[in-house]
Length: 181
Image 1: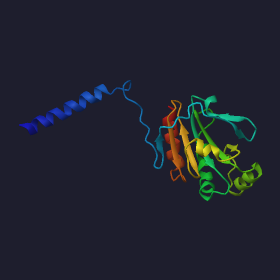
Image 2: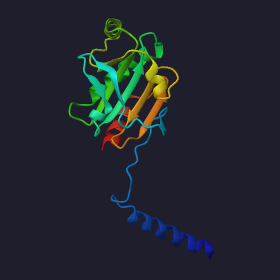
Image 3: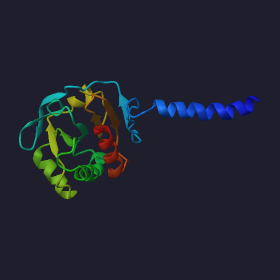
Image 4: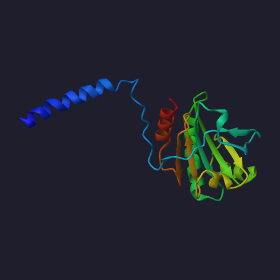
């Protein structure tokens, strides 16, 4: 008798849960790609005055609060960093202008000439590059080592990864779009 009640109880319970979990109550779930982890560290309002784009304007996450920010920290001497630059370019190219997602490749400590030489040798020509004068940003964000990547959502959630990214541009693109909207 208990066995037959289970057959009735579970479908009824599933139906109740399905009705209760309407889109208004359900929270959107974006599967976190392998290697990334959610962090409790806050970067809401993260600004670094010396984080410069090639054009010389400071990049500030706080200037774009409604966007997802994919920020990769790298250096010319770092072999895994060099290996993932083409992937970052692919990710950046997949995201069209006007979408609420930004990909930043932030070089640490190298001169623009060294960066340009490396990017040319890798045929990476369409990746937004920013510069930071030293490695203090790593400590500030709780990273040890390069490459280091963090993702910030409009709600202030922070995801991070240390080490080379092994995910595909397609996987990362889908994740960024999910987080954005």
